[in-house]
Image (cartoon, rainbow, N blue to C red; front, top):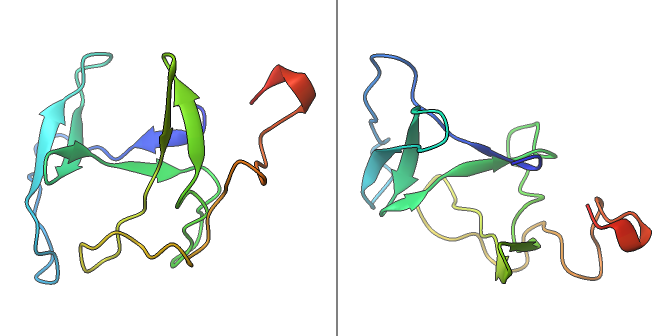
Length: 104
């Protein structure tokens, strides 16, 4: 969670999707701190540390490893679709967090 931050609901807030979102917006209770994390079609939502302005998607197609598994993060557009592969992202060949052999 040093590069990916859970998108959480505020106290007393209820998840509401914009009319452009076609999937199901919901929330789950996080086991680490008890907060409510937003979900899209049942998948937890996160924001990427380097995305700090509207329209940025530096985390799209970012390859990552956790718990012995390798996976790729995908951004969701405001219309509820997965961002296209041509949109900004990080790959195994470009990782702004890699520091030699020490990893992230």
